Length: 142
Image (cartoon, rainbow, N blue to C red):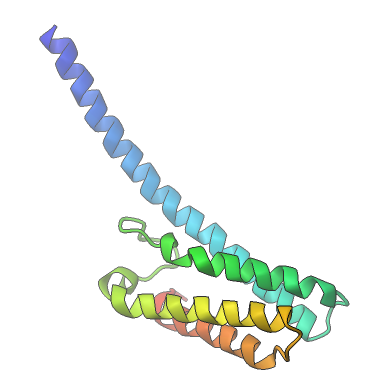
């Protein structure tokens, strides 16, 4: 009986560690997929703004998606999910990184608002691009 209990406890511990490692790896992969989605929406908006495509009616869809993805961006970098393109400074300088994430959120919401209200989007779009670049310059591997 003791052996069975000990074996069950060992399996539980091993399963917990394995699940934790998989969760950390999964978090990094999920982050990469989400960032690819952000980049895809950004590039689609660039194509629309530069008139490479005639889909101006799609701009609100991309702006809404960008604002939604920006809203969850702070949850994409949990402790233990190091790896991929993310630099270790994200976790070692979490306060500064949080400022970058906040700037991204504000810029994405600003663009969403400008698009929804029929305002000129140039300044809002530029602010979003700067927010993305600022974070990538400091916290993303080249």
